[in-house]
Amino acid sequence: MNYLRSSWADFSESFYINFIKDDRWHYLSDGFLVTIEVAFCAVLVGVLVGFTVAVIRSTHDKTGKLRLLDFLCRVYLTVIRGTPVVVQLLIIYFVIFGSVNISKVLVAIVAFGVNSGAYVAEIIRGGIMSVDKGQFEAGRSLGLGYGQTMIYIILPQAFKNVLPALGNEFIVLLKETSVSGYIALQDLTKGGDIIRSQTYTAFLPLIAVAGIYLAVVMLFSWLLGKLERRLKNNE
Image (tube, rainbow, N blue to C red; front, side, top):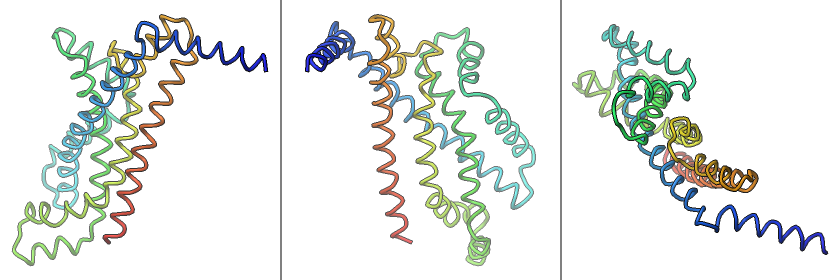
């Protein structure tokens, strides 16, 4: 019993020092908001970039047109998917924007958005290519051009097929933003590290960061599961 009381007292004291004293919990709450902002905006950038690349590549695969753009897209995919995201983040911050006074949040959004776009592109392209060829022929028989067939017939079906995969990409991206501290951006992970540097205790700050990430991922996984079931019921 004395051991339990002593352990509880030690835990309470550590909790107070790490989170309550000097309002250190603000490092986690503020960092969490930055993490969500970066992840959400980066997903939007990634979808925009990925959608553009996917349309160019699938158009080339089906028609043989846009050869130069298809080549540039292939180079983009090879470079982005072949290098670590943290290296891309450092290059964008210290090299591309090295001489410009720019928000670290914006740099992180650009870096993670460009990185995510490469994976989103292949997800969407796979969705487009999975649509039955008869759908293109049906569009042509209705007098629609290639672009109209793509917009009104193919893309809606492709997006429906790849929505769960896009949801998983958001979850992956959310966790990838934890390396934002390399450019001194005070995200959730950096917030926990700041607390650790002030209190010289690592257990509670890092466990708190891990717990917050886990809770958010579980929430989005649950929402993603509901979306998948709804899409399946609508088939």
